[in-house]
Image 1 (tube, chains in turn brown, orange, purple, cyan):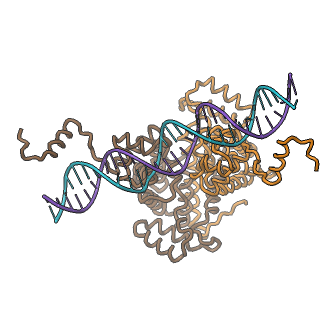
Image 2: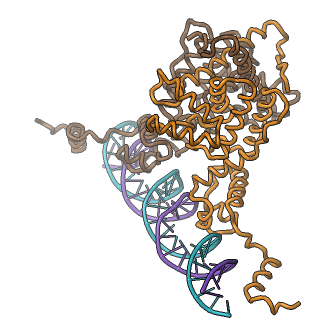
Image 3: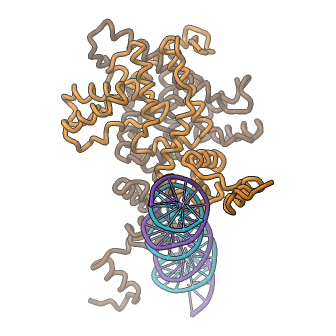
Length: 250
Length: 250
DNA sequence: AGTCTAGGTGTACGGCATACACTTGTCAAG
DNA sequence: CTTGACAAGTGTATGCCGTACACCTAGACT
């Protein structure tokens, strides 16, 4: 063979690629996927930058060229998990579509048992999470639910079935209303449905002070929905046979 | 004054009590209360054994004479929070009683925002938490709900409204059924209602392998309850005025 | 050929939980 | 009054952790 046209460096690189291709370069994606795998295997509490680096055959500080710190690593890991949730199915009624999507989300969270806890510990949502919420809202709106009802519904399923933060708009805690309107309009470009709800919530705020929405009301909304459901099941229990598998769509 | 009857040590001690009474002895309760206060003020992520010790004017290792490790400290902190939940109100229908109790629990969790996350990270329940669940189950049973329905209901409110672990009986994961029955009977002495549900769940397990209960079923139970509720609210929306404050008991 | 830059390295620091060996304060029994 | 045992608090040390900072190195572009 004739290597005369290649620099010394190129030769070394080719040899490495053939006999020891271990210098696959790191990338944010590779780091995140490795982190998810490590958390799946060893548990989230034993995921450390050091262990992760070792897993990747690299020195700990190398990771910081791809994620700014561990918090951001966790955010990215959530994005990976949320990315595994199937897109909405088309061509059915909203209820079936929502049901299937939430079951898909559940499957993703079951595959990564650490995920729900990590999601809850995050303080602000990433674009990936916002995309997911946006498309979820879209399903309800397309199903004919009003803005207000959709808002309550998102709180109900959000904090209960997925653990998604209800504090979405609370970062505007000490921001004056004008600033708030601007932020919402800005957001509306990428997330029109979210913005729609946010802006509806910031009007109508008569009793509420400066807050985006009334958490207490949202909580009681979900609570009463459940209690009413329990009550009607209790009434059914007396009449039908007591093996009350539900008669649902599936 | 005549100190002749007192030893030198006693005199010193009295002087300390008068002019510098800072040697109030530690106790498990004092440690736990200080930990709760510190977590409330500084956030759970900045609660460390070192900071806690400093807060109490003591060296870190002193804490280990009162809690065996940090995990147990967190368990104890949960107990403090759960201990703040009001006992059930008597003399109303079950729905009102449950509603008030859950709202009381919510108030406790709002006072200690770190608590829900910590509760979810616990793997097994303390006696205090079991007591709380026991009394909760009692309310439903007294209200006329069947064992099965109560079971589903506890899962629904447990994992959604309080974050209480649904894995209660999963520590019996790799335990043979006989052992399981013994454990349940043992438990039944202190927690008859919990045991009742646990034993009902471990019979009827035809499709389920060795598991105490079918998590997937519990999840879908809650999901469908909510979706049905959403659907009926959507239908109402068309008819009544769109400011749908609910007509609830309160 | 020279410079720029992205990616990887090495060292170091302060904070963490906690093991282990120790002192000290308290009190009951001899 | 002494003793000695036991509970409570101390001091020191180990091995983890996240990450700041200075450095190197190889390829890309001028």
